[in-house]
Image (cartoon, rainbow, N blue to C red):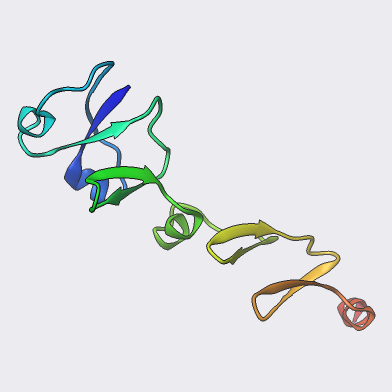
Length: 112
């Protein structure tokens, strides 16, 4: 499936569909008056990022979604190396951006 999106909207992370076709539209740039970009796939990702070098879109990374306020971290989540990681807040803690197990001292201090 060839899906054609508005370039300026895609740069903002919005997938405004101009058209779709089972077959590639020849010279789609002129067809969509210099505003269209081509995405090949069955479904457009829910959160997109415009890729200037390829003049298309791809699925947004966790980090990009957080930066654009399209997603928020839950209480038991942390961003490590561009990926959202879950941890058990009852038995683990975050130290220097790493998940580590709580110590006996941590449990004692939490009871206070």
